[in-house]
Image 1 (cartoon, helix red, strand yellow):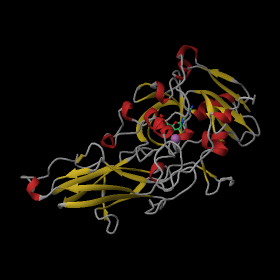
Image 2 (cartoon, rainbow, N blue to C red):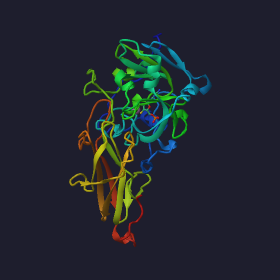
Image 3 (tube, helix red, strand yellow):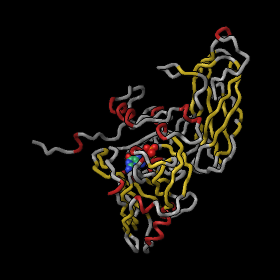
Image 4 (cartoon, rainbow, N blue to C red):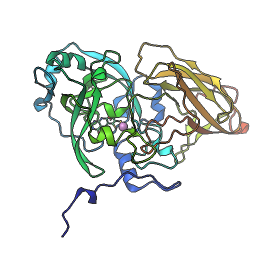
Length: 386
Ligand SMILES: Nc1nc2c(c(=O)[nH]1)N[C@H]1C(S)=C(S)[C@@H](COP(=O)(O)O)O[C@H]1N2
Ligand SMILES: [Mo]
C-alpha cells in the first residue's frame, strides 16, 4: 500500500476557468472567515463582531495564563514574555485599517482559487499594545540581525506543506517608528477576541493583513531572509507559477461606498428612489494618506471630486468621504476611486496576478432607481443613505 501523504488532502494552487462556479471548499472558507457587511463602513471604528476575519487554519485553544512569547535568535538576551508582562509597559493605541491582500479576488477573471473575497475583507480597530522596537531594544540586537520572524500558535497544511503560520519583517520595519509595529493585546479597549489573535498578535499599520501575525508565540531575529511558505510561496505577485515574484507588502489605495438605498435580498442590487441621495464611504492607502476620492455615476465615463471628511490624525485608518447625487429613474452604475499622496490611483482594469493579491480595481455598484410614481416624496432626501 502507498505511504499516506499530505498531498492526498491538500490541493495545489489553482486558477478557475473563466465563468467557472465557486467550489464547495471556497464556500466553506467564505462561511468560516466572514467579511465586513459593507453598511458597517459607516463606523469610524468597526464594532469587533463586524470586523472581517481570516484564519488560514484553526483558531487555537489559547490560555492567557500559560501563554508565552519567546523572543530569541540574534539577541543578546533571550526573553520569555507573557501577556501580563506586556501590560506593564506604557500602552500604545493605534487606529488601523486592516485589509486582506486577497480582497477583491473573487471579482478577478480568471479567478484564483483561494478565499473568495468580493470587497469586504476590511475593518478598522483601535489596537493597544507595546511597540515591538522597545522589546527588541531591551533584548538587544546582536550583530548581523537582518529580519524578524513571527510565529503564530496555529498549525496546518497548505499546498502539501505542513507549517506553523509564520511571517517575517525586515529589521528596519520591525524597529520602525512610522509606522510603529505593535505587539497588541487589546482591540477596541477589550482583550483580543479569539478570532482576532487572543491573547497577543502583531499589528503592522499600513501593511496587508498577512503581516499581522495572530496568536503570537515566537519572535526570532535572524541573519538570513526568511524563506517560509507564507513569505516566499504565498503572498507574491506572480504572472507565472515559476516566477519568484515580488513580495506583497503595503496596502494599495481603495475607496468603497456605503451601499446606498436598500438591497434586494439575493442579488444585493441596490434600490433607491428618485431625488437627492448622499453617496458616502471610506478610502484608505497603506503607502501614503488619501489625497483624492472621485465618484462616477455613469459607470466611469465622468468623475467628480468627493468631499473628504475631517482629517482626524489617524494616519493608518480609513478616511470618510461623501458626494451628492440626484438619482433619476433607471439603471445606474456607481463607481468610486481613491488616489493617495504618493500618486497611486485605483485602476479601471483589473490588476491580475495568480494569487489575486492587492487587486484594487475600482468598485462598481449597480443601482436601480425606481420610477417617479413609485414614490410620493421624490423631492425630499429619502434618507436611504447615511
Ligand atoms: N497566526 C496567524 N496570523 C494571521 C493569519 C493566520 O492564518 N494565522 N492570517 C493573516 C491574514 S491572511 C489576515 S488577512 C489577517 C486577518 O486578521 P483579522 O482576522 O484580525 O481580521 O490575519 C493574519 N494573521
Ligand atoms: Mo489575508
